[in-house]
Amino acid sequence: MPKVAFYTLGCKVNQYESAAMAELFEKKGYEIVSFDKQADVYVINTCDVTNESGRKSRQIIRKAIRKNPSAKVAVVGCYAQLEPAEVLSLPGVSVVVGTKDRHQIVELVQEAKNNDGPVVAVGDIMKQRTFEEIAFKGHRQKTRAFLKIQEGCNMFCSYCIIPYARGPIRSRAIDSILTEAESLSKDGFKEIVLTGIHLGLYGYDFKDGKNHLLDVILKISQIEGIERIRLSSIEALELSDELLNGLLKTRSFCHHFHIPLQSGCDTVLRRMNRRYTTDDFRKRIHYIRNIMPNVSITTDIIVGFPGETDEEFSQTQKFIHEMDFSKLHVFPFSPKRGTLAADMPNQIKKSVKTDRTHKLISISQKLEHNFREKFTNTTKKVLFEDKKHDNIYEGLTENYIKVAVKSEGDLHNKIIPVTLSKNMDNHIFGEIKK
Ligand code: SF4
Image (tube, rainbow, N blue to C red; front, side, top):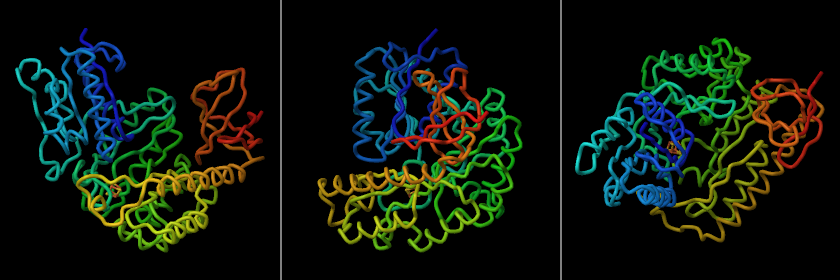
């Protein structure tokens, strides 16, 4: 049986696509082995969101070639899409596929086996208008499955290369989404995380004016066995009143939104080419909290964006406190070749970015603690993952609080009410409610 090994860099969407490609290889009789094992084929699903991720992608490609010089090495994904010539310049690469045609990965590898030279399948992604169906099993984590429903982005934030790597927005047909969700439910998954590059624009390319994201969520919620539906990330302005109120119609929708803010200062937001002001953002958050009082709102912040002054950074800190997020993901700005921001004047020194990153991480730790504290002495349902140690199981509430309990019985993949009692450093300890 031929063996194939995968290495995936970057985001959850890449992980989903690697899982889908692995399914295609399995169907053709390949055995999937871990990347540190000898394999006949290595697939490296690359990322190029920062210059550093491009460098890491090259490093992994070279590693695969060294591991088995006679193996076929297929390089897929954003770095391959944006820099195919750089990929081809690495001796030993057999197949280069960008962010489309991954559904043909097995055939392209076969073609490379029959060919002398490398096989290149990198097309003009900006002309792509349909969602690429790859396979149906989804990206399965311990107790949650990621389900990709959308591809591409049209927003062109000034720091982001993704619209050039992934092309314009394309939405997956609802029947195909439901088929995958049903298969996940049959295999015992209780929680589905809907994912995409720009999830909030799901259905905008269908041009019939309906709110398709809400349709998708409501239809999945009717599938027996699916008890939780979560969104991976969504932009503030895409959380319309219609969508938010519609979400209240289903108990399976998790009251947790990851809403990227990026900066809490309007002048920085303008330089970032984000399409909202802090006031727009504030109004959305107030609306959400009004109708979902226990909601968890997490966010992304970029620090050290070109020209970010001390005053602008301090406005961001103030706004973060005002929004009372439950967690921050903090990214020091990293210039990406080919984006507007990479060529902006007044790039910020690394030491300043590091200092601002540390400040926000420390704020995030306090916010996380404060959010958990609000739920001490309450009872919440927890979906448990694996046993950690000494009969300690960890899991998540629907509003994304990490909970640990001690249990002799097996709690894996069970949803159980827990009384939350002791707020620890990065989770809350609780007892199963009898
Ligand atoms: S919304 Fe902005 S940051 Fe997000 S993928 Fe699109 S261009 Fe990139």
